[in-house]
Image (tube, rainbow, N blue to C red; front, side, top):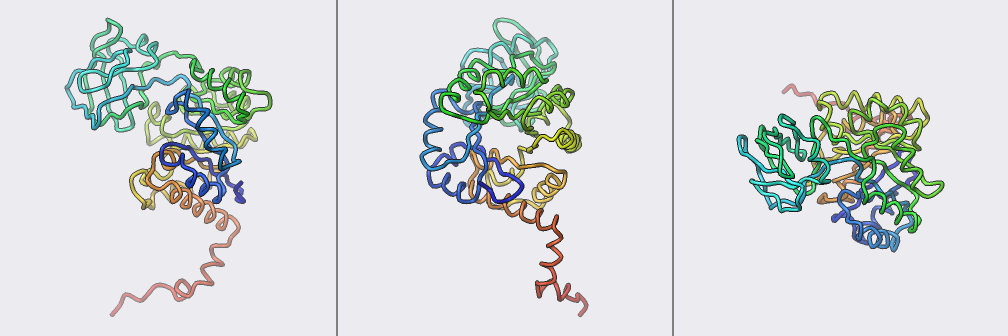
Length: 351
């Protein structure tokens, strides 16, 4: 477990589900391992848990799919262009520039002519033109890249169950495997939290994820009903303009702290490290401000699940937390005094 006051939660995936990476995360003090059910087949849960436990005693969290629509598998390098027409279907087809599968099938039952649909994080936007025949036809309003199994947002949003059938089966399996933590995706109100608590084993720690407009609206009840809160900024940005997300983050953190619930922030902490080994100063600034807001922990998502350097990402978050804790204790100025370079001051630029 981490010796730091601020915790680090790690999402596991293809990049990190290897004994040597798990050992490295353990040695660095990872506090919780998250298995994302949106990207983990039901039959892979038990082998994944077994792999983690073969090298680690760090607690594991099953993170539910929740009431979210997603696209199915697509061809490599699928790019949609403005003005193209696309068939949306509930059938399990391989997506291309002519058709795209949407799950769960019930989601398409809520679309109407004129409905707006967003696909993936690259900003693809569709407008529904026709509905019928177990699907819909849409026009690409804004083009972009689409990848397999990515989030799909609909306006108006579909009314889906808080837990999918897969979620319920995964929770039952988790209880048999002794899993102690369960994250509820897209919590809409306190009753959703009560539902997952009723299905999880007695004494389990429930983490409610606030990542939708409805979740924000009902945050007080959700916070009161849950054991801890995760703010997923990526999914929240699908329903709230991106420039407002930082302010919603601050509001949720304040409410969680007021309710004495641990609160964690997820998504885009070190997004550049998904494909690079060099972070940006903006990412350092974001982590610093997030920590100053009063969060209890940070959640690495794509960085450790599919990133090029999971251990390097963890190290950078450690450094950010250590800097925050030093600054909180007034130690940074002491370090400045010890540094000959800083003590000497900036070089005189004059000739």
